[in-house]
Length: 423
Image 1 (tube, rainbow, N blue to C red):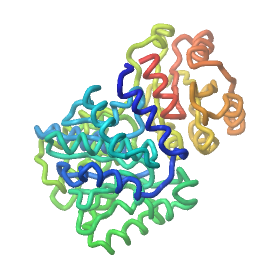
Image 2 (cartoon, helix red, strand yellow; image 1 turned 45 degrees about the horizontal axis):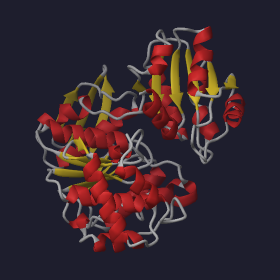
Image 3 (cartoon, rainbow, N blue to C red; image 1 turned 180 degrees about the vertical axis):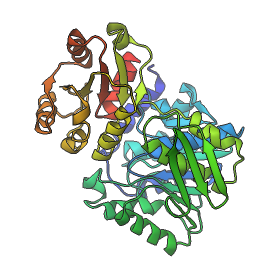
Image 4 (cartoon, rainbow, N blue to C red; image 1 turned 90 degrees about the horizontal axis):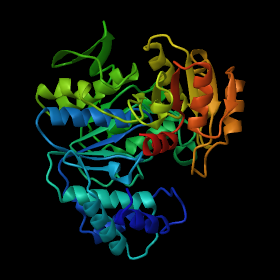
């Protein structure tokens, strides 16, 4: 849907030449001009990490709502519409409200240099500061220390999900350096939930928490989560929970659920929140089974899945998720950005895939050309070919295998295109 917000968002794109330029100076200046809305939010849960932060946020939100409470949520990037980034007390921001806060931020910024993510984050904070809710869920955009969301002096809780190599050009070329950036969200005396870190990353985060006197709730030390007979078993010092498996698919979602449960317990939420967290969470483009739309209409016997993961850890996660599904010839339609480690992403998935059909991501300047993706797939032992579009790739696959399982994957940008045009 097009509206006034689209025009203002286009104007905002022109305010700063770089897409990413990590510093908080421009954000502090604009927030000050807006009356510091970041200080007027309902209690904040601030979430950073390379993988799993969106799913963990979705489970925390489901848990809060399961307790009969309301939550704002700020996430990025959006998949189909910008409005998805700002949830106010459980509802997507309305077009008039979004237009109003974007316009207000644009005016208050006075034509100064500011990135698109920074000014739109300020708009999200402004909207959330003016709407009553019980909690605010803030997802870090990139890194943590210098991310535009890192402006809340005293959150109720911080969460750091697993850290791995991604965005090295901005955050550093080792897991320790990247963990140092994520650890920048830790605040003095504020409890920190930490899930699934490597020894290298965990040591950096733990040291920062200790230096700031932030009570640490670390997986493997203070809480444990396991999959037992298809159920989720969570244990910490207050006792054991035996819950249904997460609604979100894959072994890694047990870990994300554990982090959400540790967070809900740290916040003192009631038991009604626990089951809701694991069973009611929704997070699009994370092993999402498509239920309708033109793609399914064109291939009615096929099983279509959408996944936006794009780094080596996501590739391993995807491979594991495929082992949970009944055996069926499985094909990939893959489009990736040229900043990603494509070989690292594809290698774990290769043994589970009959063939890969590579596409360029429509309308995306930084897409990897389809031919490059196909070549990378062949280098890890996959059969590969190119297609002009996702629909053309699906037609190629189902001409040979009408009842194929087809996984559309490799980028959130590709997933967003699918949800916008075929959702």
